[in-house]
Length: 159
Image (cartoon, rainbow, N blue to C red; front, top):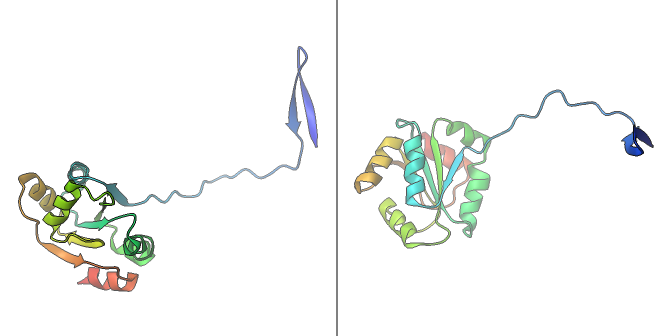
């Protein structure tokens, strides 16, 4: 039922007189996406420079049109066990969907020109230093060149 409240001077507002609803006392926790998404070398360098220099880095080179890339992101990387295994890692997704010359150069630097391509480096410092100096890619501790299930990803991360 709607009741009209008189405000004086001929003004009136409708007021709700329906059943009262409980007011939420605590908001649901917000789960933040831990992945930093970048599209170019400058953004990649900035993300690495802002990260803990000693933290390991997982770099997921992917494209929006690549079905295995989307499945890797939405299924394997989203698995709660994988999320837990990567909590201490800097997680960066390099989107090469546009296939620019800059993307080709970054992929050549990483040593593989197709997607998906996932690499893990020992530290953010090693990657940003190599990029800034124009040096070759630092050694990787993991490299995947195709879709893998969450179980396969966990096994690879454990090596």
